[in-house]
Image 1 (cartoon, rainbow, N blue to C red):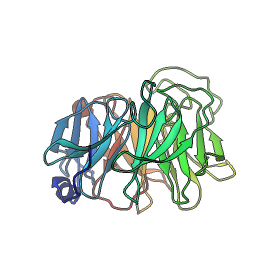
Image 2: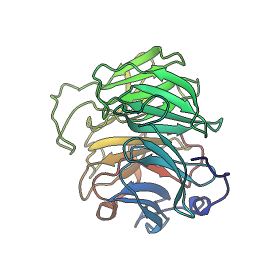
Image 3: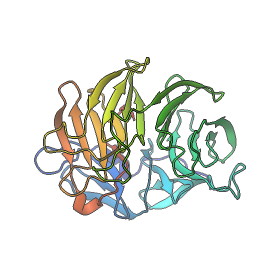
Image 4: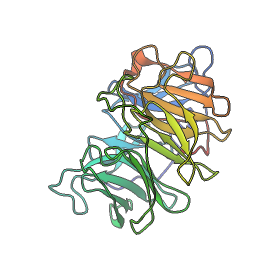
Length: 316
């Protein structure tokens, strides 16, 4: 389905607003939970909503349209004004994938207007244009292949390489354009035993998200490792936010990361249960919490992805 011309939409107006929940919130955001895709405003109220299933990635385009996942293997663009899908790409059937088991857990709008998609199951990164034409294919290295766990978030970074979270391997890999692994980091277990589950009492190294910082280090959301770590190019841990280091907060499945222009980190806290925030903003230097988003009763226990709307030029 071809895209419609990009144009202003209600999301642009919404994104100009600040969002808050009682007491100390500062951000508007888009998120998904409890079968709903929602825009939350400054006062913590839902300004826009539509029925939508689970996602593992989300992007708000300059037009205000929302790029997200539909089902297990489609990437779609939604016009929030009409609540209609105006563009879609089906990784389950297009460009050689027909009949194969494919899941999509990451995608990214690129500066040239094309879309990058990480395809688990066939273990590749692709770039397609808006007509669905395959422009580039990068094969991924996977130690423990599985269509549900080959990848979580993946991003094309400033140097043109791809930073890919391999959940099933517990490794972050950076690939060049030919598919060569140019850097790899295995998320440490920090002396703990692996324990299955999704809650705060599980443990593992099933990383979910990673961001390349401007200082050259890499920030990693360790998934069921319940932490965020900053790693240098020579693989030293330069900074570590542990599970119960923030007063009154327990990190569970740590998912998305967003680095704001002021240097603060916004951290996704999935499967944390009632009484725990879904998103946390901290000042990394002193690990001070400056904002929390806690709407468990509205969005439930499986909020894996969000994007802050009132801040431009963040890294995510």
